[in-house]
View (cartoon, rainbow, N blue to C red):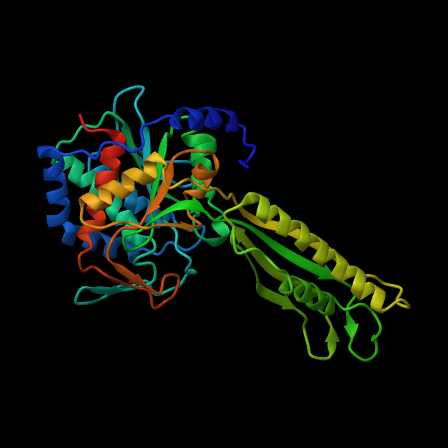
Length: 416
């Protein structure tokens, strides 16, 4: 089920058109392509240096502006056309192709999960780099620049247009606001293929894990734990709801998950709380499965109010509940036979490895849900501890990841 955006009709037609495309784009070869691949490999130390420099510019959630300004400057230095920052903070640069040809977005996300004030200095220990966000997604941003640099060095001209984009709001509460803006406004009706470079290693994400996120808040009069005993308790209602949620049975196929991630409320051990809340996350690649779980979740939340109020029938006051949707990431799947998946696999094989196809929640969720051929590609090297202060990335052999992204872009855009 695709979201009913104002542009859904356009994307439905586009998806139907692309469904008749060849099984996979021709993996390009020739002197210019070989030169670009070789240049990407020999300049990998420069790519790693840029990765470090980018990472040492803090980009907390909703505060990506400093990193975005730096990324824009780097795009301009590479000679990309029409470099700009859009109204939500995405940075966009272009390598124009021919009219009527494919338009490929190559993106990495600017934001991190780390709050303002986090020490973002990167330490080098041989080939290992240590620093918050060094792999997720400083690596992706550096690879975007390397791909543009290699194409320029080899003077490659593509039939299709390639748009290089640093997006905002990919992580957590950002709720994919950057890529949503691309498809709803900034680039609406233009994009035929989308690649997000986000992650380390040598796999690709072809299926979008959708998510529904909620803040649930129970409210009551509160009071003294002894003197006002007998009134409904928001914390108790919250506990009843959590117990019901914890007992949910969910399918393994399609995989469905749920979690109560944060619980808040109360002021003192001897006080009945005036309010209590929880943050809830539910995920699946199936929109139907998510909707089914959501229905059960809504019922459990409201049943907890009835149960807590019913526990104290003599009370003149009653609890209320507020259920606020704090985030929605659309779900979607693509077959293994999809041309873009086959293209990425063939490019990996050309470089000596066989990339597995996985599922995850990334910027690609939006275009996948719209039927636009899309992938999230790993960017090489070996990463550990993503989203932690101890995040690390080993650059040994990482040039192959840069080459992989480059080769897929060239295959989709077509080399003249």
